[in-house]
Amino acid sequence: MSFRMVVLISGSGSNLQAILNACGQAATATAPVSIPGSVVGVLSNKADAYGLQRAQHAGIATAVLAHTDFADRIEFDAAMLKQIEAWQADVVVLAGFMRILSPGFVNALQGRLINIHPSLLPKYKGLHTHQRALDAGDRIHGCSVHFVTPELDGGPVIAQAVVDVRDHDSVETLAARVHAAEHRLYPTVLSWLAQQRLTLNAGLIYFDGQPLIAAQQLAT
Ligand code: GAR
Image 1 (cartoon, rainbow, N blue to C red):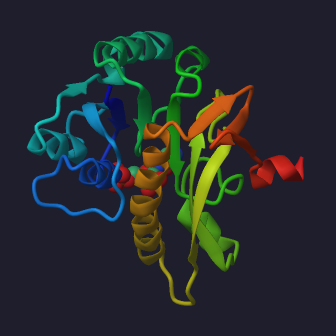
Image 2 (cartoon, rainbow, N blue to C red):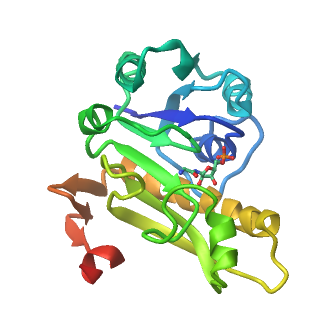
Image 3 (tube, helix red, strand yellow):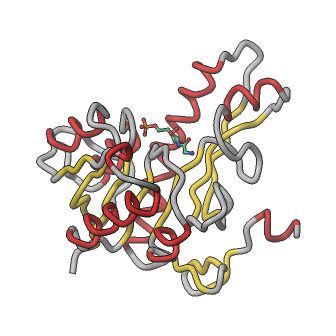
């Protein structure tokens, strides 16, 4: 049975595009990584998210749920979960989805909800990660793919990609390099998930049946 991904976005969707390319769901693109699965639905909380056009261009079902139409976060998350279930997702992929998720939503998708974050977690959880890396004078920066837990940007890290910080970097030039790294890292991790090489059990990641000890777990 094929591996079914639902992707949640709020904006440009360049990571969504990289995933579509890797699934062979984009008309012309060739991709360095191949994911044995498909994106079956794209959900956005913003009607004008450019990623919706990317999905439609690839012939993929889309849904818009505006958080402003719901009484509270619990109701909004329940509506998202209903749509995700209707699409029969094996995995839910957060790709620039800029809403905080309720514990109920996260727990309902335990081990099946992953996120990409533009920093080397546990550094720089939250927003403005590139600016913060520049302000701190960091010489390296990057991105992390992690399983999502109720703690914001706090779930166990699966893999990271590192980029160098250059002397004359601006937020824009650094962000562009991190984005390029994201477009390689996310499809790679999703290909492992699609091949069932990665699992989450009692808060620990297993890769090919062996526990993967992430840097932050060693440090605690
Ligand atoms: C990506 O850089 C992703 O890491 C970040 O949003 C961007 C979305 O870009 N996500 C977060 O900051 C989540 N905390 P995209 O829409 O072009 O894929």
